[in-house]
Length: 220
Length: 258
Image 1 (cartoon, rainbow over the protein chains, first blue to last red):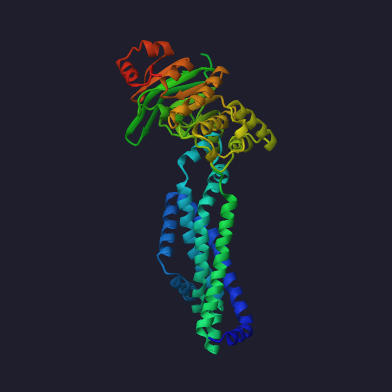
Image 2 (image 1 turned 180 degrees about the vertical axis):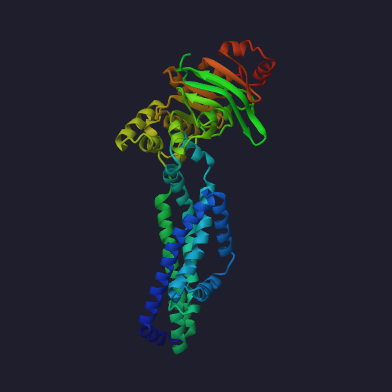
């Protein structure tokens, strides 16, 4: 392995790589944000929804969670266009990932809310809090702390799943890397390098999660 | 008819097919301290929980200061009051639970302040000073900024009592508040309750501490299979029980042991 040669090529390819990295980060960020927002609604519906709503949302999460992300990505790009919804590869990819993320976050939220002892709600009721108040001050803050570790996991999964968007031609980090490899033939070096970049992103997410976890820990 | 603080009329409550309360009648005056005793499954806790609508009930009525709790009759139809109204009515009573149920993510003072700020709409400073006053009262002023996880069971229960009573309820409900405590922590909680009773707080206690019930209450209710089996002043109840059931129960209970 010729390090100098690799560094040369890397320097020449810096712009496409940075662009790809930018795409990867923006895809992941959008998918995580939209997926989390939607996921919170999913979780609330699963926990507190009236029965028909709960059934519908349960069907949604079970279906999405049981489907490979790749299938979701392909479906959202190719199938949605047949019903007249023409999305760019980027939009279709973000949509698929956000939907996937929402089903996971939904389950995490539901699990966290249901894990809170019933006595908490009763104590809140007993001092005269309404349900929205109980949720805002008692259940929500406790659920958030429960959710955090699993949510960080899901966020990291989304970054990894963003590589699947290369299949529908989104020029994210993996696709850019492959293009560089096809010109330079330095497959080992560049795959390693791409892997390293993904690792850095996920490591940053994990550190951030740990930091928030520490900051919000309940003294005991 | 004098205006009762609490008036329960023909209270019926079922879980599915199982009838837990089979017509309970009970009245209580301002300043009364009533202990409810009875074997487990007799419906004492359920009765207490109906009073602040933690349980729904299917028949009868409960009123506090003449105000009917939880249900209203509109056009001959009995229906549940609106959630907001029920929330307001729940604040008429304060409740302490067997498992304390403090909010683990808030300091002791915050636990007490929450209801004051969000239900009574007091400012943070007002709420804090009331919280400190009540924490002082239960002997925990110095623990105001500790979290529940940093407190012993007895201390947690005292915070929980302060949280309930700081709301200035008309009536305090105590649901087996010492049952989950280690024996050496029971007394500190009972002392707090006793001192509140001496201040004239009206309260209804479900308890297994017979000696305590005997000392603190001016009336004792013995629940038996969903009905009031016997009631009277503690001296008669404990020393000269009229019913076979009660004397059986007292024999198996801890009365006279300590």
